[in-house]
Image 1 (cartoon, helix red, strand yellow):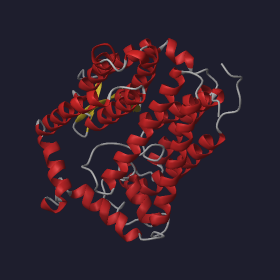
Image 2 (image 1 turned 135 degrees about the horizontal axis):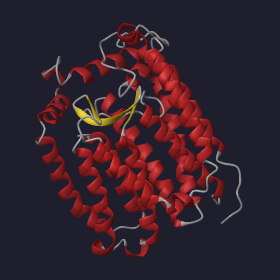
Image 3 (image 1 turned 135 degrees about the vertical axis):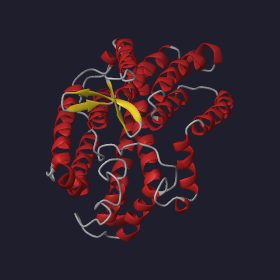
Image 4 (image 1 turned 180 degrees about the horizontal axis):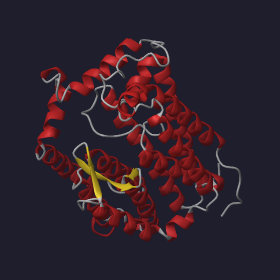
Length: 365
């Protein structure tokens, strides 16, 4: 193992800049709603600051923990996350929000086990692939066992149901398996099965069908299933090149529901315009580039797959969130990493960046 060096400074800087932008936008987007519902305009901002602080501390602590330690505890981490996925389904333990039983209450706060399952699956699959990299081209010995554990977790997440988080997890794992050298022919075969299954999942829930129809024509139900995307586009459009100005959003005044969460990029685009939105996307692109560089320079296969998984998770989540906000894909409940309000998602992402930073300390580049 190469001698330790300083972590990738660009990853640290970009992450903290995104986090700062997120804190500002969470307050700006939520102040009106928080004042109305909780009589405290800083209600969401204070909570986000708490989770951001915990996440940053976790990031810097994990940055100092040698990444191969996660390999030794990967099975235990995965089992604990499976246990929490079971607990969240039990009435009285799991909390229902937005029609999904996805949270477990902890005092005045709540955690979302499916968010942590994404990280647990990356840690476990990195170990699995690094040990069986030579057999990954075999469907029976390599691909089937790896996908089996992934879809078991996906099935449990869908019992909540949480299609968005499940999609991010599966997409991340597919990228990791492909990077390990799985055969394209196997992916094409499974792709057909996956598409059929995805269509079946959509058809099994009326609200998902409404999301598809509203995606194709949001004006067919402007006060129902098409409401969010219409209000999101109403926010992005007037933003123009430079935006209406920080804090000057109109859509956050009870037009766009809970704008501090999944649709925070719409408020950012409204207030900061095309320039502000492009700056955020540039920061994400820079973060992903440096993450790929870390993966390529990792001293062993486990470090490579671990870095690939973390980068893929961030990239897929960003693409889905921005795609939803801009009307390019149907609505799913996916947060924008480092920017959206949400304790579990934020702390998980910052912890994952901590692992990436530790790998960078051993990277050849």
